[in-house]
Length: 95
Image (cartoon, rainbow, N blue to C red; front, side, top):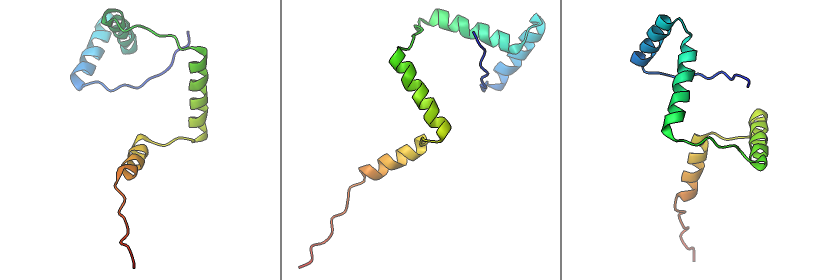
């Protein structure tokens, strides 16, 4: 299994507690976080799903599109939807 790097934000108190516990146990904070996530997934009952071959293909196509810059942000999408929902004004009839 290859490792991927993630950046997460923790509340200050949780971060301090994580670092303090890691020092006491002479472990890295990331190791404790991995253990906590594994425990959470085990007890939460959230099933792990394996994507189908067609889903994997769609994911790869999406990742390639993002690398090409072929995407819009969520804010851009919302603006487009808002414009589409606005009622159109009708022009006054000219006789």
